[in-house]
Length: 109
Image (cartoon, rainbow, N blue to C red; front, side, top):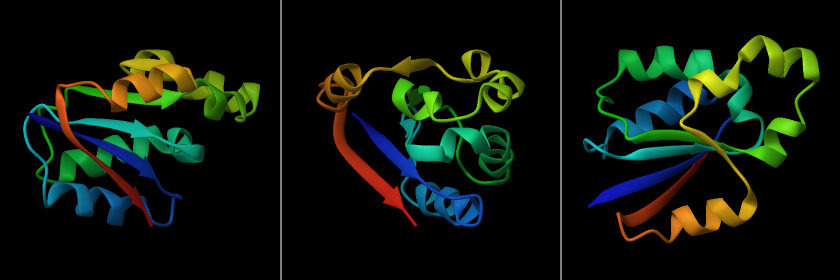
């Protein structure tokens, strides 16, 4: 079984959030980036590389959250190539209820 981490962090708390995830991380866990967290994808990847987090099954973000970024920012981030998928609210709910996950953990620092 796997965990689905819902990560909602600012740039100031992103490293600490990655450290929190690393304490319980298991191979095959997944991450959903909530709010503006998707804007920090490159920093998140650097923090994940520094931690004990590896073998990530998927990294997702919500379409509504990405639409809140400026077109320029979204273009520079190239999120489509860095995320497993961009989810609608309905897909997010469905993913969080998927039987592959035995728990959903929200980290919001």
